[in-house]
Amino acid sequence: MEISVAGRLAQREKADCLVLPFWQKDKKANAAFSGRELFPLFADLLQSGDFKAQEAETFLLYNSRNREKRIFLLGLGEKREDPEVLRRSFAAFVKAAREKGYKSANLLLTSWDRASLVAACEGVLLANYAFDRLKQDVLKEKPTTLLERLSFIGAKRADLAALKREQSIIQGVNLARDLANQNADLMTPQELCVEAERLQNQFPSIKTTVLGKKEIEKLKMGLLLAVNQGSSRDPALIVMEYLGDPRSKEKTALVGKGITFDTGGLNLKSTGNIETMKLDMSGAATVLGTFYAAAAICLKANLIAVIPATENAIGPKSYKPGDVYRSYQQKTVEIANTDAEGRLILADALSYARDVMKPTRLIDLATLTGSIVIALGEEMTGLFSNHEELAQALIRAGEKTGEKVWRMPLVSDYKEELKSSIADLKNCGSKKGGSITAALFLQEFVGKMPWAHLDIAGTAHKEPKHYHTTHATGVGVRLLIALLDQ
Image 1: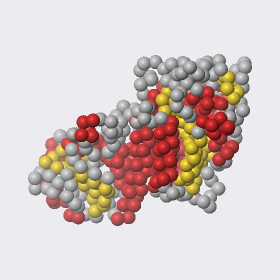
Image 2: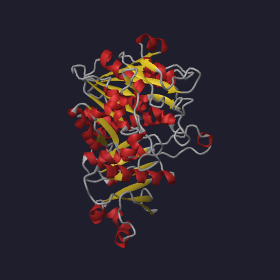
Image 3: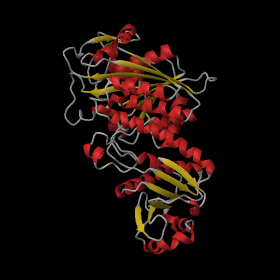
Image 4: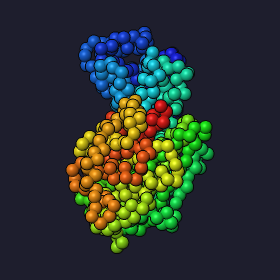
């Protein structure tokens, strides 16, 4: 999308529509910003009460004498400092504009501060997304309408860089969405490797190394190999580096769960749960999206990525409940449930990241447990951490971006659930406190290093709502960039 700014209404370019946002109790004040040219067009409407300026309310006016001919009145609700209101409201405008087939828009945002401009821009860009590449009618006859040009009227030239920076971050979000939305027969572990290598080719600041099955066997990553046993496709370990601040010793490792399809293994998932399991690599998708965004904006930070990639499939050699496998860290793990596979591959990846890549802090992202969805729903990501400063920084980043996290407890007494009579650990316990015991299992493989676990099972995919237009949300990209920006 082409983004531009214009200082005054008279300087605007021609577009398919003009957008006038209104706070509920300041309708007249907002209307005054539009000046003599526009105010008469909707003065009577404002007085009638037909347009109430409720949050995300849109009202379309037509006037052949106006340069745009179509004017969207956009409600923002009661005035408050909450960027999420702006994101959701401007997303509502995008939905309405796309339904009409509009491809360009002028947004009249006179006297808005930069943070508000960026929030509005986020809402537009996040909502201006579609995943339709597999639809024959779209490819041939009915291409999806997306906004192609956006102008911020009333913004300053100095604001343009911030808006374009945000656009690059959202492109990282959309990459994560694309990867997670892709069907699993195409988005295999090997294709995930191709995507990681593509980032290396696109950005000189990114270095990508792919370890295949033989290298993984040499590393003795018994847990990753165990999960892979039932699949006809080999596993992979993707290792990436981004050096944006060479003078700094700080280095953040991002570990993303890369289960490209999860059948549940021999503990087979049921109908109603298995259909969306192509999205079980959303953690890996977020890590790749974050690397894209970091490189695109030249983020001043140093990053490492470690992505264990495999299917959890069923075959003649599938791993079984009761089996015992030795991890990269040499701890033995009894398999209590083959559908608790994500923590197994993450355990080997976390240990590798800690011991080989030597970061100063670890963050993993995974669609790990159904328990976290029951506890927090689809609007909050579960946060587990052994480090207060890192946890609070993630909470602040969540508040800033709208990708909110809720800190969950690491209850040491619950470690009893992971005790095995024949091995060092079991991979899961009872259903009680399932998200907590999963996090406690991961904690066994990070040692004393500052670490945070983000369980995105509830937030990585959801029904279309607000600026989430398809199932995959790309959650975590904006959160992590905001964290690294602090």
